Image (tube, rainbow, N blue to C red; front, top):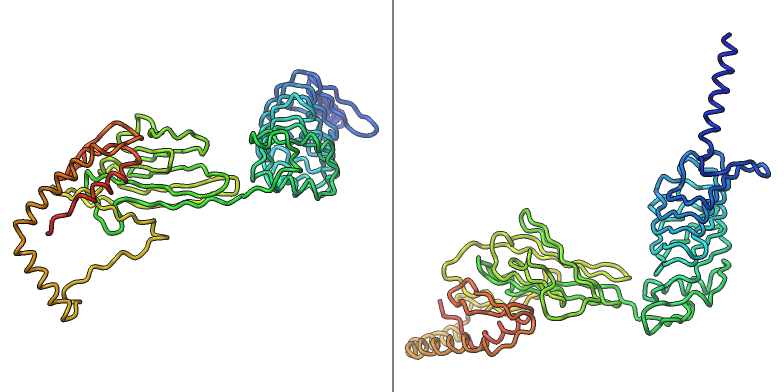
Amino acid sequence: MALRLLQLVVLWTTLVGTARACPEQCNCLDKYGLQFADCAYKDLLLVPVGLPLNVTTLSLSANKIKLLKAKSFVNVTQVSSLWLAHNEIVTIETNTLAPLVQLRNLDLLKMNNNELFHLPKDAFSTLKDLRSLRINNNKLTTIAAGTFDALTSMSHLQIFTNPFTCSCNLEWVRDWVANTKISIPDQNQILCAAPEDLKGIMVTKMPKLDCKPPTAIITYQPNIENTEIYEGFMVILNCETKGNPKPDITWEVNAGSQKFQFTIPSAMEDNGEPINDKATNSQFLVFQNGTLIIPRMSKKEDGNYSCSAANDLGKAESSVKLTLAGTQKHATNSMLDTTGAKSPAATKPSEKHAEPSELGEGEAEEEEGEEEEEAADGEDVDAEREIEGSAATESIPGSSCKTNPEEFEMGSEYSDRLPLGAEAVNISEEINGNYKQPSR
């Protein structure tokens, strides 16, 4: 009786296993001692579940699959041939193909009818036995350097008919195709689709480009290293970048509980207007040239400011910290200090002002004479200040501002109305040419 029950259990398990072994949409059969699962031409949107655990050849061609999920193949680790041609695949999630360690022939996205525009760098990192890879007729604009490094058994690769962007990021493909022993057919169809001046040129004949990794450094005004910043001051931060291709700039602001990110694409047209929206432009003005202006400093803007520059060759970053000193009823206009200084990594030592105790005897006598002369001309100096203060005020309307016609008022006793925008730096220098700070 017990033996009979055991036989029934085994039979039931076999029947259930067989039922689950082949999805309803597929045909599963043994062929030449190999397990074959044919799921082609079934209008599938995803890889079906319940495939035989011992399947070795899996055909999913000519379906409507758009996404290959990370766990699509975790239960079919014996697959050595995978057919995914003529689908609509756009995305391959990370580690999707990692379980397929037996894979030898991956006909991935063959011909057209697929929309793959990005290939993860590690997509094939575990497939050391892969011998044939076809990713032609897709929408790949680039392939990350090192994508094929793990494919030590590969003998055949098809990458033609993709709209490649021939930038610094693709130079490695040009050199690799020219030197590899792997068969790469139809090289006359591996063409540049962009930029415009290289359109239609074979990738293997792409000219050597002047590629330079990005650099980024923040300059600021006033010189925050030797100037106390009070409430109401204007602060200008400029992210100076270099690199080829021209890098994209990103500002990240962490001020108190507030976090902001402003991205400036290199391809964006510079119309002189702030790129940030109304939600943030009462606190910050961000311009295409990399300038970030804080029109009126307050406790809310106290925090860390970092800018990064990124291009095909990497990323660079620079940061500064703005600390509010407090409030000062008669604060000197922060914009009148035009001593621009670079971020701490590249700041030059500020000029030291000598104290009387440090002067030699002759220098002390000379300074005494100067003080007497200044005392005698006291009345003239007062008159001079009035004239110069007036000149500073009058110089402002004559200054042009291409960035923003809007104006704001400085929070200080010299509260002239300065135009907003990146040209505030030039305007402040003009003011300084007509303004002499009173002696204290």
